[in-house]
Length: 204
Length: 271
Image 1: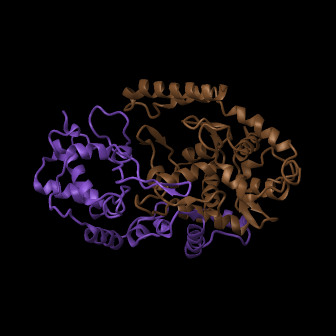
Image 2: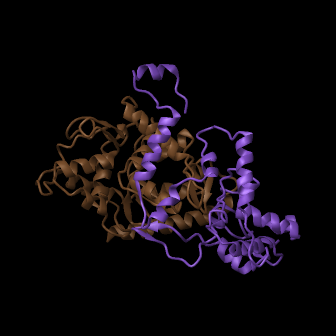
Image 3: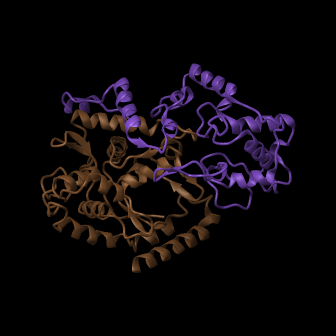
């Protein structure tokens, strides 16, 4: 938000703080104005380097150097499942894609779940007959039909779920594997859900 | 139980409206608007206004006092137009306060209530009769119905709050890498079937700042802006936002200032 000179003059000596002052004031709020059941959970508010870079205000753009750094950090973050298999079970992936629960904090308690949901349905169109899907991200309907299910596509798909910032720095999509929201094994099931010809997402 | 019944009927209507409108998703920019309009015309939240009015004038608390001497910025007891200018700087507390934090100040200072007790109960359980703060916030805001939001920045602390709010709106953290803007930075977006308001657009942000407190159909109670912010952080998997904290007031200052000019119409109606 840009204010013209007249507004600044009318305000007298009070005015917008500079960005360093703003950051100091706002970060103090972040450190004082939230509660969590454990100190470890409170650390969720602490930004990593990539999150700091990706928190551009207003119309500010990433510089090329910043984008390159985010990509580099993202590439370095990607871990593969111990089995080495990148394509899991599409039925488990289907359930995960429609599960938006896990790891939320309310009333001083952490939501207890064995594993977190995959959150896909919140933002992506999935199987062709599904109405209750979001549109914040691109449609995934027919994902495998359009790309096939080669090893190269499986690896790309795995990496894009694990840490999409390796391909789209600062994209709105969470780095689901890198932030430990999902495990590598869970991601292999989502890869199967996207690629398997038998998966509902690839129904014609 | 008329309230609960109305709530259930409202939800049924919302579902029917959403279902019927679904095939038109591609053509219409606001296919769920029909359902919303039907809901807004018969808003159960109206029932909370009377309750808030009674609470406002009743002598209550350890000091057996009403809230009639509470100053929301225009002078003691002057409510008409007061929330249109909130948040604002208050010299007596030397801080920028939104409606709910100011209400807390008065309930503590004038009525002698314990701050922690009020805060603990401020956000009521779903399906309950609601909290005192929710009813009071709605009543006080309703006294500005029909007036335009007119938040100004003049004290240095107001500028600081505004700028911190903007910073927080764009600050990404946690395991979802979300800031507010990830969901509220573009037009015509939805989480599943729920519309996401486009808050970096003036018309969008005006819709936000002029419709809280609102009746929340799924909860059968009136919810406030403090609840709205708290619930976003919950869904983002972040720690719990403290009620009436500076962080919450900063975000509200940022949004309310951006939404200046919006005509206040409460209670809003949310799904």
